[in-house]
Image 1: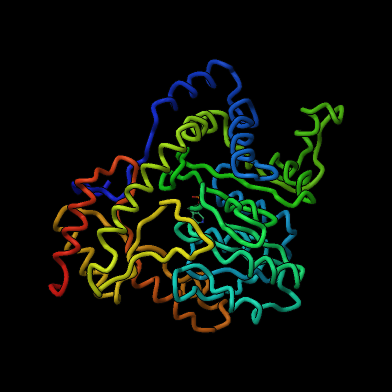
Image 2: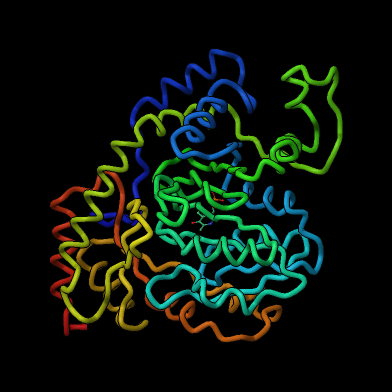
Length: 382
Ligand SMILES: *Cc1c(COP(=O)(O)O)cnc(C)c1O
């Protein structure tokens, strides 16, 4: 949308989306939880070892479902990074939670698991692990702390489709490790449906209730399975289901996932090879040995804010659109006064220095080379 020659993002379509949407329309089942919804949920559960999947209209919705499921009450504390998207925190704040922000690590913007335990109090209910850029948090440490303190772990896996963590339980897909996980299919993610998301329920205790919350607080899912002879209002909930039109679009994307991922990873590797050690005004992403790269994002961590602004400007004049990312939530207009005042220097550093490069399926090798070349020219000329 920038009007520049090389834009930042371009949503991918395989072409099959239209066929599946036409099929959904002619089937006369347009509301949620139909054939396409079930196909997407089964596909993802089987491929990634998720216990139960429920499509939602966004990752934001899936996070709100998680807050309801763990029964967030006013005053409950939820620990999460400050360097994340608004929804990660807002979903819990809606139900009265107090957010306790933990700083990012030195190596990458994920939470520094070593700083978690000192933040736990009697009121702590959950830890939200955000896998920034689809690169896993230190899940062994996080799960171990949660287990010892009887806390829930919710993975904000919005960016983390098709990425993995290798730990003491072997290699596991992100989203299959925490008690609950939330994915996004927003058009800026790897797999898209315009707006869309999914709640993953790995802890079987949440299985029944998740369906009720999903269906506006009713037991309609049980009714459809003929387990009850009428359905009614049994709990709180909301309208979290996407329509079959959205699910039809998503299924076409899922069927192309191998190709999408292979192509994005090729782009990512090309950036990495071209930019690693190119100069000392930025560094490239760090992927810990326990994590994989799902090529959601290629970012640079620039030397400082001025360097980043300079690179954005230089690239803009070369018709290349790059963007910065999150601003620390503990300094946001909404939360500044509510935050407990602890400084979070790494979160602030990433707010000032992360620069995201164009990353989308149709990006051409010649375009990536041109981006690398232009970044190479910048050295010492800011
Ligand atoms: C994109 C994103 C979200 C929000 O996803 P929606 O589907 O737009 O609600 C939440 N958390 C993170 C980390 C994200 O990247």
